[in-house]
Length: 157
Image (cartoon, rainbow, N blue to C red; front, side, top):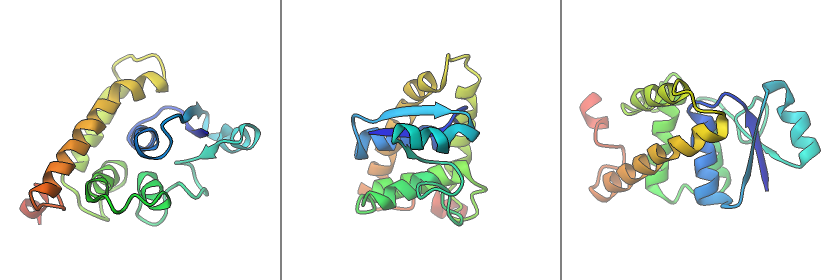
């Protein structure tokens, strides 16, 4: 299946493709186009749009697109993905929904990847997915250790 979003990826538009490939559609073809071309290209290509306004897999209320995909594809039974969703939200939004302390750090890392001189959005995704692999491993360990809110949540409350 084809999936499409805006070019110039940062947090949600790296986290969502990682999530899609790891948990939803391992053979996903990812398209990154200018914002005003997402919906017309989605219709033409039969692609699923994400992280753009007015689509099912976008921001709703205080939730980010990553959270919409987790919910839509029934992944909320994985508490590590739920925690990762909150971290992604904290990096991609004003962090007022979950107040997730790890969020600002992820935002800084994502911004850094944009300035490494990588060729395009596909290359940024390939390089940055290791960060999401590591964060998911962190989230799994936190859940295993009885900290489903993350290690730093209690400290910042």
